[in-house]
Length: 291
Image (cartoon, rainbow, N blue to C red):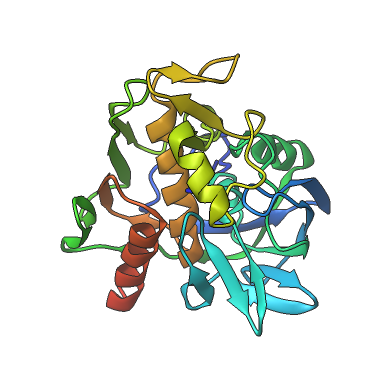
């Protein structure tokens, strides 16, 4: 939802099962993306450049590798930090890199937050596809989950079980415009199924979030906003299940902080960034890397 924001480019431009070894890939040329931060409401830019050492963010010349040990906050977004420098709301960009198969990239920030753009990963995917990618030497092995891993928080939970890659996500809101939604993503086409899904928020929550310093840049241009049974965006929804598809976008971006594909069946119910990152941590902690 608002603040819980968030194509593995194969030869067929579709994301298939991630159970096999994955080719290392970077972008072909420098890209610059500018906009407004969803939470801070300030202008920001990201400059993406080809890389060879994983996904590395940079701010004030401080390097912040996209790794779990650099996740410093998961309140309404995923924030990375190191040596006093912080970069918030990285999940959309991470999901885009996951979806375009980018394993290595240098990302410089002008500002402290990744710009929201339209609230989805659609434009990011288009830019990377248009600019092209190139292969690097070597392959990346997947994390293989041989037993069930489950985390719970109140009525929310997330789990990973043995099996081929699959994500099933469920949400349940009292608002008639959202209600209960379930979607299963099997990695067929991130660009068509998941990337266009926008972050969302409930009108009744906006004032409270802004009083806490969140969603200051949120608008109908970069989020779907609902009020009871109404969707306030004049253009309506991009999918009937856009809300839950966006939650899958968030999850894929958070899991890509592992830097490796995950071979597992993942199921989440009313989860959030904290549970997403928690699951990634449990997978990493178990050291379940495929051979």
